[in-house]
Picture 1: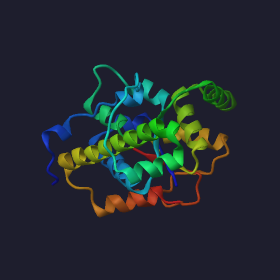
Picture 2: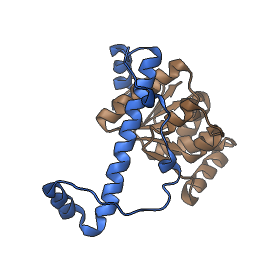
Picture 3: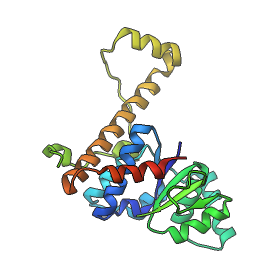
Length: 139
Length: 92
């Protein structure tokens, strides 16, 4: 059962994207797919006073995954290995890899995919590739 | 287009996700047979954790229903085409 991992793009969603998030969440709820976001995504998107849509999106999650010491180390290793600096992207890739098979909803597909490949994930943007470890969907 | 009540348009209180805060003791009336089955599965000591998990899951389910209702109120019901795409994305 694929886990749905939300990146910042899924939180800062346009009206069109909100429909995609709503459809996936609706189906996930009926099928029992888990919906998560790393805490770093919340840090990147959360401001106070917060927006209506953002609060709604946060309420869809089964879990906000904390960046605890083991995960922080895994994210740091990934950043070092790929010689990149985006902690949020690396947190999302780490979560998607750990939950595989998974789906990532992101507006940074080009940044997330190499990170997933570095984690030895079979990653695709082909939405009908049922054999992929991680399906990356652009929002 | 789906009809949405005014209170359904209010964003949910998501503080339980960010920080569940202190615990409190409640009294609830539940069917005896259900309680017996739960106690048999998790034991008396696991009851609070079981109830918390069940309540949390139900809150999330309600939030998801409200989100879908909000989106449908904004821009029309989710189409079969959109649901087919979601099924394709989530299939493995």
